[in-house]
Length: 302
Image 1: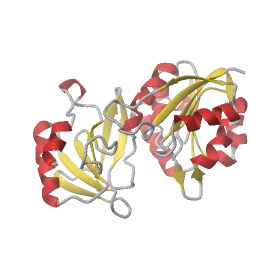
Image 2 (image 1 turned 90 degrees about the vertical axis):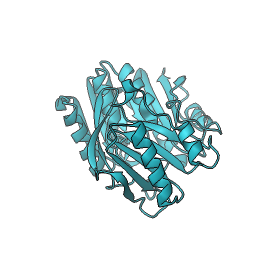
Image 3 (image 1 turned 180 degrees about the vertical axis):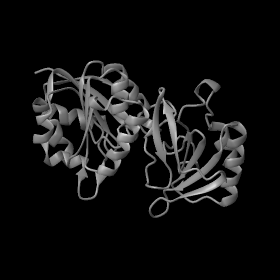
């Protein structure tokens, strides 16, 4: 199995060595026997994510190989998604828990061991690039903002203002840090802790918007069930979005495909025309179509 893993790890070329990226994606079930393994390059850290236990010797062998291929790697760590609370552990090298990564020449804070998610979702890289390329002079509503990577990308692309919304003040505080890290003019950005599905009036107050970004979790106990709740947002598009404005609808559920979003838009806001899909980077290969991240762009034409 190790031989198969090393055969398919996509080590970055020199020109992309400084960029954070996935280098092995087993969760797409494209590599038999390795469905439980993901490996990310978060310079200078390699993070191995395990959804099923592996031996210490297996981890040491992987660490030895990746450190040989990545001379700037200073630490190899593992996150056990197979264990309660998804703990992190050091495999080899230095103990590094907080640092900065780069994507599309923008910087983001990363924290290992503080929470289940490190602070940036690598499968959304092309989505952030799309926002950077399509946000010029636009007023942007960033829903489920998390640590605000979409906001950083929008402002880097020339957005005139971004309103970041999440129901978790902790991640919004990390979002503020990301903006300061990128030396953003803080007058062009706003942050608000809002339960999105219960506070549409506050969203409308700051609108209308030229671009809405919606990247919700699939399920959060007590707050979000996207199969139940996404329709509530989509039917509000006419109250939030300017005519000819764009909306990016994201879906992370492995059990719901693009057809789910298309059906919702057709039923709840038929004035929205489908424009395009934004696919994740090629390394996020999925054997079964529709299991991975879905990102759809619509234009509102009332």
